[in-house]
Amino acid sequence: MYNFSAGPAQLPLPVLEQAAAELTDWQGSGMSVLEVSHRGKDFVACAADAESAFRRVANVPSNYRILFLAGGATGQFSAIPMNLAARGATAAYLNTGQWSKKAIKEAGRQGVDVRVVADESASAYTTTPEPGSFTVPVDAAYLHYTPNETIGGVEFPYIPDAGDVPLVADFSSTYLSRPIDVERFGVIYGGAQKNLGPAGLAIVVVREDLLGRAREDVPAIWDWKVMAEADSMLNTPPTFSIYLLGLILHWIESTGGLEAMGERNCAKAERLYAAIDASDFYNNPVQARSRSWMNIPFTLADPALDADFLAGADAVGLTNLKGHRSVGGMRASIYNAMPADGVTALIDYMTEFERTRA
Ligand SMILES: *Cc1c(COP(=O)(O)O)cnc(C)c1O
Image (cartoon, rainbow, N blue to C red):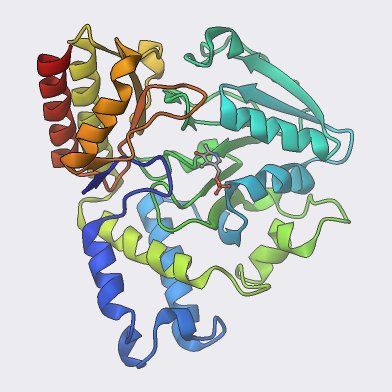
């Protein structure tokens, strides 16, 4: 089965096989990793290994902390203002789609003075702002943006320049999909369930000088500094997700690291866009320079054929291609774990469907 779900998403088969093999006897313990104490030496070593693997793979400098937190990316929509901005302080946001909007809404709920300095709603979220087309207030506590909008299939082709203002980025749907220049960011965060493992885990990479700016009344589990000091184990962390993240990071290393990952992901996306663009039957609405490598929405010329397209795809092992309800049509999410063969199978199916049904 090739699973094109936007998330939770397909995981690498070798990782699933290893996890299955270890499920009843992890490291000779006679127990699964699900059943051991998070404070025991085996799990502490497992979490430390996942952290150091993340640091190696993403080339995270030593002045950044890596936190494994519960609550997904959505939890961080609230944690970001609580950790970086006093009530009434200014925070700048770029609005490029549904996930940006959710982050903006939560910042408003935390009493931050939200300034949306670029807003792509006029294009129905099919664009990203031109570099240099927006101004970040110098007194902003941070600039937040969404490098990849999972629903619209819109991706920034550049890292926004925030000057001295800390840049905060929701990498959920493009996390470790290619090399990343961590030093350009104050905070990188995202849920694991698209590129890096099971749902429920947020991975937050925060520059050390940004720790300790939290409001006094922030709940301890949302306080990055408290969590950093507790090695992300103030309370029981999502242990299985952390274990699986470690396996996935080792899989990324064994397949050539982020350099090779980026090349494979770029090639997969280019082939699918080329197939869409070569046809009058399929259409992707996104501005060329802002097309996502991860989430590729497309419509059929005749929406009356959507149901047949999806049923036929399922029948040949291509599943979860239905587009988000706000966009319609189809969406192929082709994250790290989607093999090139899966994209080839999708293109073959699309070509055949068009030939026989258009
Ligand atoms: C999936 C997603 C989220 C939400 O993640 P949760 O783990 O469900 O909170 C946030 N931002 C982006 C860009 C996403 O793709």
